[in-house]
Image (cartoon, rainbow, N blue to C red; front, side, top):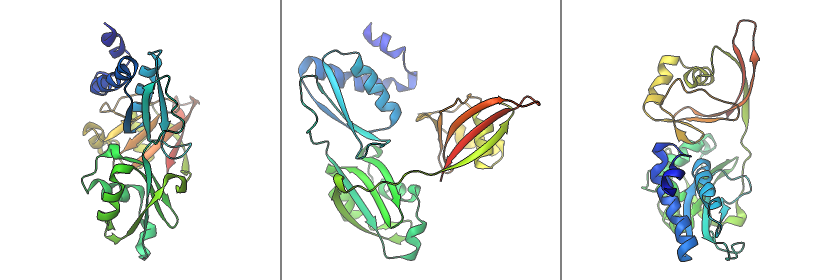
Length: 261
């Protein structure tokens, strides 16, 4: 009964993760077990936090290496435990290079190189591309492997060093502000304008499951976007709907979008 009640709050596709997260919560509340999760995206973290809030004897601590971290590890534990000084098992992989082409590398280049080593996405936190290198928050248990095996990123030879999370340097993400006038708030229409490709071409990544809205896969091109929504399109980057204004005289929506650059 409780499980069906919980399911009602989430999309059917999320049920496997809900089952896993609810097991963590139950084990903490009933059997006094603690669980350090992998790095979770904001949607997954929301699910875990929602389930923790349903249990009076369970708490969760979040840490992604920095106050504004997007991807975080959670420590789900009985409410009597002091979690403030618990080791969240985070380390920083610093990536540098002496090659001139190094400064042209982007977030996706680093991500591809790391995942290409067979590393699961859940082991990797935020990737901070800096002017003189890159700092990647990683799970401590794979830091040494990455440092030993990551020798190149997009054909650029790199050097790595493992740093404590206290040495993390972050980069504030920059937004290119775009003012759009659109016929509707459909995903395919707004995505087409932001990426500057035709609506017919933007349908391919949507239907292939390569588009996420608020970190959930969205395969419906007609999905209506709302103010605050985060959209990521594999191969095209990410954008956030900053503001949905009123209608123009021609009945079109004024939409302000911030494209991550």
